[in-house]
Length: 357
Ligand code: NDP
Ligand code: GDR
Image (cartoon, rainbow, N blue to C red; front, side, top):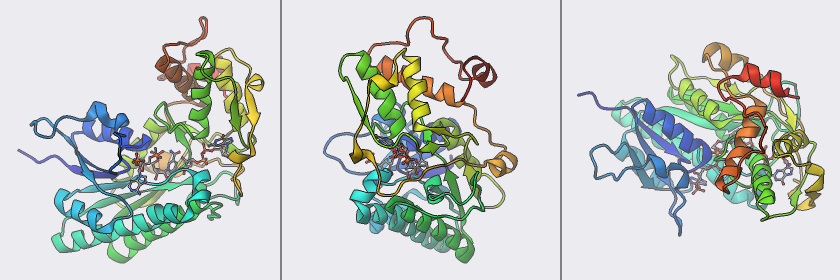
């Protein structure tokens, strides 16, 4: 019997880690994830995938570790012997990275280096190839240098988080060139879903809408509504990660929709799906501003389209509606009667019915 391919993920308890685990399990992989020890369980996003490891059918295995702890990373790689490693772990909140810059840079920047070092040694010692995916970010483009942003646009990071991601990006390139590692950088633009962390702007908005309708909240306090982002659907984006590691050669790819929308447009659309007017609920709070902001992100995914044959399948209005209805459902509510429910598999119709501003 052939052994299943083994993948190791950092950040398996996060939004992307959960969707990528689903994808890899569907493809027949054995999936190993690194989780941090916490005083309460924080595995909600992957609980539906977990089977008691004592059972023969178990395909998902969890290991305690941390990107700030190189010895453990090394031990886990030696024990698991993965053929693919996806480095998704990060202190991933840009605003928080200004409050906790040292920790952010340690986990995001040095953490990546620790992982690369462990993989390099394992590969050299055993001769087994390990393919490596680094979760790079459109935040690396930061201060606008070109529109849209592609693989050749220069980086100009504007936060401790983004500086650390730039460091991790170049270390990944450097390990590819120095040690012949199959190492790829995904430069992913914002991607969201019902599993998005509650403090990122999209989920903060959709969750607030549900709580307002449920009578649990009457206002939402926000920062800069003018920032523009290229928002896609997380499930589409994890497919691109996997595709990068299935190519003949390692490379770097921008993954984006090629459309941009302001935070205010997101508010309008999301509140509109619930028949609410956003201006009645949104208040400004300067604590949600950042010392330096990234004003405009819009990606050029041509290379991923052509070389990976990757396309996003969910449009902006579909994504917004999916998130609003999921948060409503969680509180026992549903979209107002008469609202057309956007079919996730029919983007052409959706764009025609609602427009995508
Ligand atoms: P999340 O914030 O949802 O998840 C982050 C994951 O990293 C969690 O599993 C978290 O564990 C884990 N983690 C945090 N700190 C450490 C640490 N010190 N050691 C090990 N693991 C740690 O992020 P996403 O799923 O949204 O993003 C995945 C990756 O992609 C991140 O690296 C992010 O920076 C990057 N990215 C995300 C984009 C997006 O729009 N979502 C766009 C571009 C890049 P715990 O649950 O214990 O907190
Ligand atoms: P971002 O995502 O910083 O792009 O990083 P976030 O959703 O936090 O912010 C997007 C934009 O919205 C503005 N904003 C607010 N943001 C938050 N969180 N809360 C608010 O109340 C608020 N009001 C306005 C922000 O100023 C910003 O302009 C995300 C993360 O997932 C990163 O890890 C990832 O690398 C990038 O996306 C691509």
